[in-house]
Amino acid sequence: MNTKAVGIKIFASLLLLVAFLQPGTGQFLDPNCGLRSAPVYVQSRIINGTDAGVTSSPWMVFILTTDDYFICGGTLITPRLVLTAAHCYHKHRHLKARMGEFNRDWNDGKCLDSVDGATYCNNRKEIRVDNGVMHPRFNSESLANDIAILRLAEYVEYTENIRPICIVLNKSWRNFIDEINTLTVTGWGLTSKNGSTSRILQTLQIKRRPSKDCTWYIGRSPFHNEFCMGNEQSSVCNGDSGGPVGKMIWYNGFRRFVQVGVASLTNRQCSKASISTDVLSHVDWILSVQRQIGLGYRQPTSVWSSTIRKKNRHVSGYIIKWRRVALPVYG
Image (cartoon, rainbow, N blue to C red; front, side, top):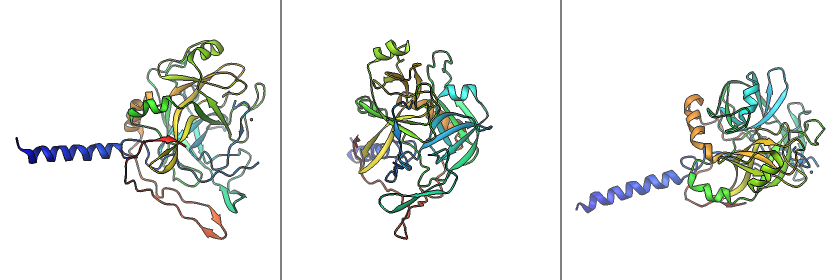
């Protein structure tokens, strides 16, 4: 046996394994995903939620029609692609996506000071949607496979309040993700059962629930690529569809927000239980759509151009260089 040749093959295999495990190659769709600056709070559908921090969810996308009618939430997953619910795109094909949105009543350039002395500015970016793909097995009646990807007409530059969310590519994360019991949902949906959609981005901590709870409160059980979630007096509601269900985790020394689900279906009371489309179950489809319409991944001109100013000192952005392999933990 040629031990030298065997050794070279083993070494090459190990290099491939390490490369696969590195973020941005085998772990996440976008290597710059899930990172956020310290959230700034201005002060409980999402029903009984709270105002989110200004920069706490920079991956949130405000999806509206070309005549400015708000329909759904979504998440930025690459500089060109937005993940949302298929039923949002099924009914409305002429859409725009607004990144960096927080308070719908703020004008562009609105700035506020936080308690730590930093100044944060609301720099939104609105881009026309020029293409979209719904899951081929989406059912508009049952809302099975309620997931879609929208393509922006141009690449968006990552900034302090515009960044991508983490989409896990490695299916070996399945057990870890399924064991996450408390999740975070975010959106501009109804804030009361008979109210109007929120002007300010809302966030809510929500629990996984047994599938039988969704059967009882919604009228159907989650399919194999969905999961049930909800709280006693709070849940997602109209307008929250398409938004992220996720968790902040520690990975390789950094806190990253990972998208676990896409808000899909709830009951008329917007309480007790709702159904989310499971993202990891659809990751092969996500990758195929990226190859189909994503026009390739283009590194943004900057990972983010920070607009933070503290004590008259500009804090510049940075690029993370990964050097070691680590397992995710809740953070």
